Length: 607
Image (tube, rainbow, N blue to C red; front, side):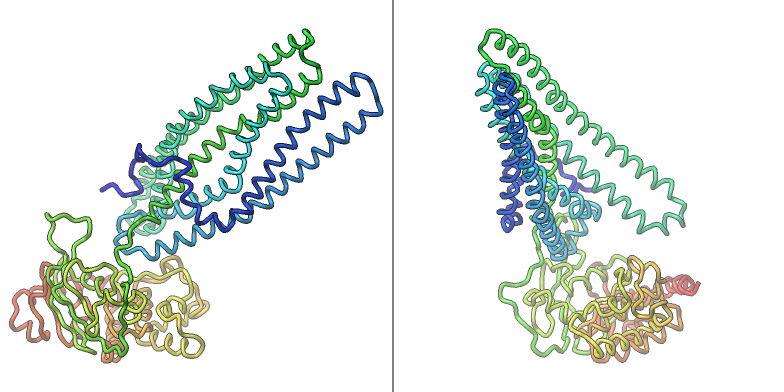
């Protein structure tokens, strides 16, 4: 399996953490004042906490030393007032930052989803769905928590530590110097911690994405796993991935534990040294008891900011990885874009033309041949053409080029004389309807699935178009569902049979009322009688629509006015079924192979 972008090893020359996280500024900017307000409130709480030791110093050296009971109560009330003010600032900080952080998360998630919808199918061919899911859920949630909590307290705690050290020096320069020197190992370990932890954090988040992919694939393929009895094998694979993630999480925990060792040990050692020095200075009369008491009160206030640095650093580095992963998707190039000066089709007739069309996947090298190699084919307005060929001849790929699910790498495809690349994607897909053999439905109502391509319809007109499409596709079974057309189908329509899903997908393509209809073997899962009725209905639709149908069954060929034979990515013959049967040996071979493949398919559909 080739290495995908989400599996890439982090580069050693990555930008700084601050610069990398700074890329989310466009999403943060609309809410910057509330976030700064929250940071200011947190700063106010820290400064109030640092002011309390000054009151305690005055209390110890003044009223308590002189035993003046009249001044003790005011001092106590002063401490109480400062405590209440600190609590107010903390509550204000929470109120100010919580709502903006959730809105930032929502805007980033919407932007990511819009990007995923806009990126071409080739992008989704390369990326695992679990990796995209973990980026849109867990990574963005981590960014939200960091904005609401991590960055605010990280900045405030760093400033608190700096201000606190100044305060410590005011109570005793020697004690402050001891405390400062003792903290130097913390900063050294913090720098070493970033280099090690950022690599492990990236690996962990990628492994979470891989694990999500395994769960998703197993859930979607549960019928296959049960049918082949491969549940235990998949469990073993999942267990290996989970064990690898566990090992990475343990490595992360060890990295965090190593810095926590210093964060807990160094302050305790500094406290002990300062206590010894403070007692000696007090005995020499160079320090009052009130100053010593206030020094340790201030050091106690600084203990949480110092100890929390490790937690907030690890959270920051996790966030940096989450931001990197988010922008890996957002920075992905969209190779299929709307033209700068789009054209329109004022009066669509449906003339479809393939002009020396070539296609190969973008990551293929010159060693590989084109999947579509110089196709020349013209469909007249209202004509129905069947596309036949052996497996791997390029039929489905050719169909995917019409609605620009992929872009041609050579030549052009035109509709009514206009290159499809000169139309906006929205307009192109209004003119082109698609139904694939592998019918995909969404976990919503039958009605919404059928009218997916007609958001412009409402009321009675929508009902009429939907009913007509369901009738043509022989999908009247929807009226027997619990809530009729308002019944929600299961995920990917798995609550329906294969034939039912295929008929709803066909109805969806018909309801779109396109001028060009491309169908990839849309009747493969139907039984003989249902297929005949659907074909009769399709003849009425196809009489007014230009249609290109990939045929894997001889019965589908009978729908067509003409047939195009595809070999090795090329169109080698075009004519009516009778003409090709009489003149083309390879066509006769293809039709005979379709006859052979058709029997088991019918038996399976009828079972």
